[in-house]
Image (cartoon, rainbow, N blue to C red):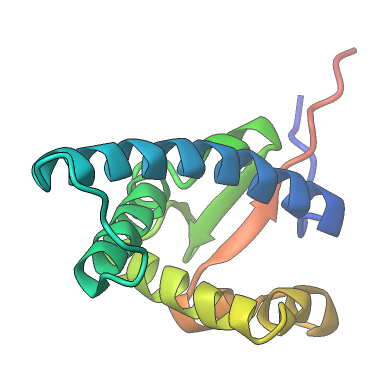
Length: 145
């Protein structure tokens, strides 16, 4: 059976992917926080500590970067059949992952405009897709029959 044509994931599907991934990321950040406190002699670390903030940001970049560079899918993307592709191949490089994550933060800070751009542009690319040379693609389930 021939697979269906890939398309751009819809807003609800992307929201579900983000929700899944945020639950997992929050768990990873909680563990990273425990490690940081343990390394700090059991003393609490203030949220305004720049070293701690950079550490947590690095954990986030590594979290997404690892999934994106190793198979092109986070766990949320896998559950919703969304793939990250670059030049027709599944997965991206670490350089692209860093660029994608950085621009996604800017997109979020711009009240989500960079994300909404996905459905406003004729290319169907978000800001972080455009700047990283990557694209999210959804493959529908193949019909059985």
